[in-house]
Amino acid sequence: MRRYRDRLPVVAAALLVAATILFVVATTIERSQARAGESREANAVERPAGEAGEHSESETTESASNTTTKATEERGSPGESGEELFGVNPESAGLTATVAAVSLLLAALLVARPRNGLLVAVVVVGLVLAALDIREGIHQADEFDPGLLVMALGTGLLHLGAAAAAVAALRDPRTAAIAS
Image (cartoon, rainbow, N blue to C red; front, side):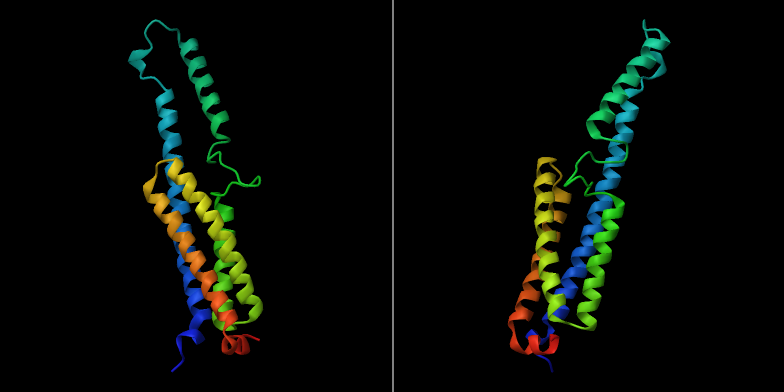
């Protein structure tokens, strides 16, 4: 039977997969909440027909248009959170898919053929994604969203765990011999 240290690449891969699943779920929830918020804002701009009162129809339409334009300028274009990191929307579906694909590919390669280069890549990717997850956790704390805060911090811990398991595998001489 193989010892625990011999399984470290598999542990790192499993943690990467778990982090990826949690990341995809959290970003999907956040995007759906953003869309729901945009729908509520759009509905709040429109007045019910009975409240037009003394204003003419053109004044009401102009006021609603100005309010909608101002809200869109504050948030960015429709469908975006308005939040950017290095000029990229971190909640975009394309970025989510790319991060998920890279993480799952790393995990699969780590299980199939653990190599020192892959272990180093897992360390780097795990630490970078953990930093981004912690940043997202801070953002969710500012937004007062405890559910997404817990998911962001949980994803960060899983990424740190994957990086730690990869470092431990790199430090073990027997794993290093297998991974060479």
